Image 1 (tube, rainbow, N blue to C red):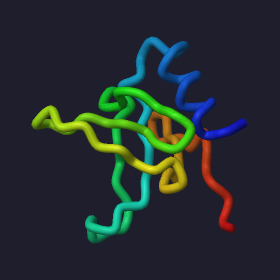
Image 2: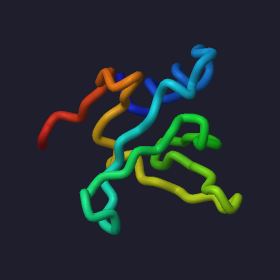
Image 3: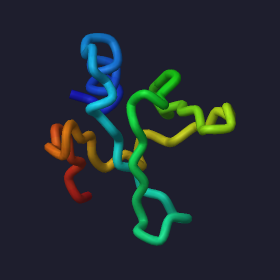
Length: 82
């Protein structure tokens, strides 16, 4: 199953999306990763996940930067090393 399909399934079929978050590669953060709650996701297409920040600005995150999808600290998807 593609990442897009997993994200869409969670967005459209899960009632409590607050339990889910994405882990993405972030070159600015000192850890190299950033957690993004599913509640911040606005939409997704074949190449990007669009999220809204606290100031209301929309950002596009490339799907290839998603490394994990987590629910309550349990990994439900993890990208294999290439």
